[in-house]
Image 1: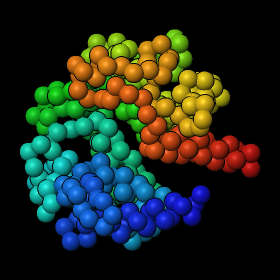
Image 2: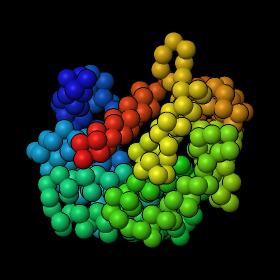
Image 3: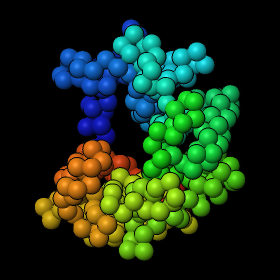
Length: 295
């Protein structure tokens, strides 16, 4: 498994990293760059990946590139090919900001740098305070206008996880309180709440959200219960898992929601990302259990 991961990582480093202008290309085909725009999200994920592979040289480079997005002068979530900010990127996406926080936390821990760890904590507090002001809206403009008011379960899970890692009890309680509102009486988590904190039932329950709950403390989420729910409702009889289920916990085609919202496929499918996240979350849970058994 590690061998395959290393091969993919080397391909990523060779083809996606822009050594000249900084940042990560959004899309390539073979050795050819398709989209030159750079996303804060991709650079944050690249930093997390470099830390995971204990690749100090690449981690240092990605940390430097991360600051291209975060400087006061250039604060933006999207940069064009030469790493200059563009208007469309002048937003605050809660998911992107939380993953950026996690990358800073991981990098600071990796190189034992107290200043970066302090920066990560201050960044998280700023992001979380903004989220609380806007009822955990998914996207707001830099001027504070709400662009997408839907609340995403994944964002709240990240908030619970990071606040616990940073031992920020006040923010941890805030995220935990909201986490409870995503729980469904029929099992699992709804993936979205509206601005009034009601489940957006038509958007169902995404596998990636329910898989990520496995990263949380066992006092919050029962691992066996979660895996039983995933196996029962998402599993394909010939192997793998569907990416979503509907409000009735069924794998189905939803033409109506897709037609009117334009933001999702009506068809369920098997996602490589979802499977990778599920495997990663389970591996972290196993690591924790092995550590406890050693103690």
